[in-house]
Picture 1 (cartoon, rainbow, N blue to C red):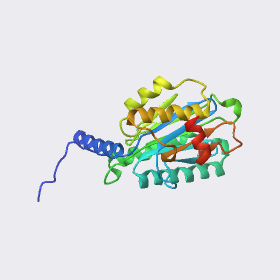
Picture 2 (spheres, rainbow, N blue to C red):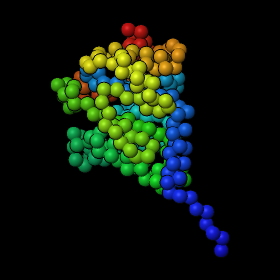
Picture 3 (spheres, rainbow, N blue to C red):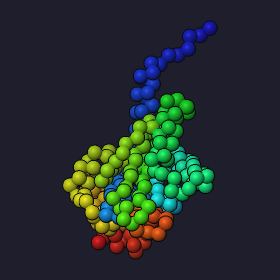
Picture 4 (cartoon, rainbow, N blue to C red):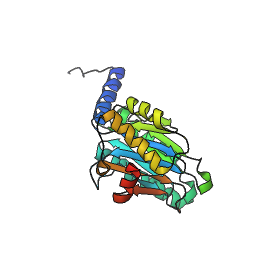
Length: 231
């Protein structure tokens, strides 16, 4: 009988991590930044229909980078999980932390060998408070391809070479920014690292606003997007 081919577990995990990182790095970076009433998501995305960001539930937003078909399946699964929990218990019981933990477990299982290859995705799950007075209650969770989960604050960049973008954000970001000012901070950071001007039409901008009635998610398009980017 032929001897099965052996790969050390450490080497296998290293190879899978490298594969996932390379796949994610081929896409464009997405930036999230807190502002006075919530959080904004900003990324280059010329598509008008294949979105990187979306609403998951009343107060919860989703953002992702990497392979579209993979993070889209994760988004749909998250919506279904949130709908079931909200129906069985109460809408207030659906939280970003619970969703982030579910995503973390799913990605971790896939990375450890549940699938032929690891998912080439990174996710952000954000939640704002129940009331407009809860503007300081913002939760932002970053889930990596291997299931690792990080509780982020102030701002974060995911996908690609994020370190120079986060350094650019550090120089620009300030507490209690307005929504449009936060959008401009993100766009300027992306443009600085890219070394070129990024037009409003090439951007996808969305976020969560605690002052909106019930459903907090918003998406900026056309004139509203242009006004936010140009100031």
